[in-house]
View 1 (cartoon, rainbow, N blue to C red):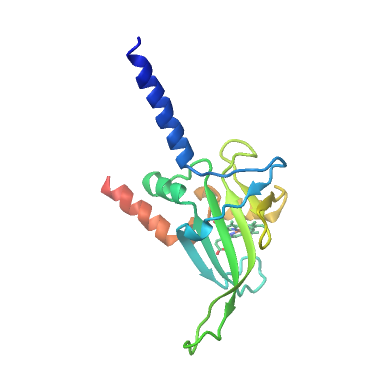
View 2 (view 1 turned 60 degrees about the vertical axis):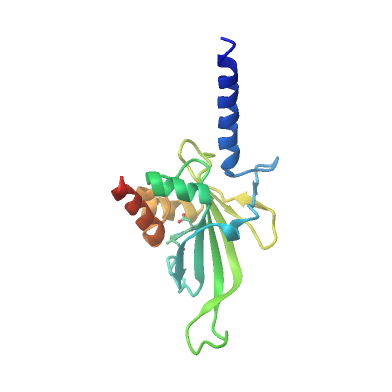
Length: 180
Ligand code: HEC
């Protein structure tokens, strides 16, 4: 029995190291999400230009990032683990960047939001959070908002994530699946 104890202790330690390695979402006392401060280092899974999905004649350049641990998990399993954070950044297009003679590139950020598989609405559910420039916390967007219905209706088969817009991630999972 005495010899088993160190093994049990080291298993617990290994489990807590594994848990610590997955950043996942953190919240303040009011349930607001703490905006991760390292999202610029996360893999970009999709970029879109002038996507007009609310019939508003879109003009922006959008990019979507995924936290690195969930990226790895998705590539290997084709599923988003609980704790997944996706970040959407909406930028105005600019044209005047030399030496470009045409085309558009990223200008100022005009929109930011997170889509988080935090199970706050029940098992497997995601919550949207909005936040403004420089804000350290984001507020949950009420479930009655169109964010939820559009994502459910058009991306319900892919866990409410718009996988049809994220070819790199999709292909990475397909490669991993065909290698097994
Ligand atoms: C009419 C459909 C529609 C509505 C309404 C909508 N979205 Fe989306 N959302 C999309 C599409 C399409 C994408 C794909 C990527 C893009 O926009 O460039 C997306 C992507 C996202 C992403 C990136 C992660 C993911 O799930 O694919 C976030 C975060 C996001 N939307 C937040 C929101 C928030 C917050 C709202 C509400 C304020 C909202 N969306 C409302 C269609 C919608």
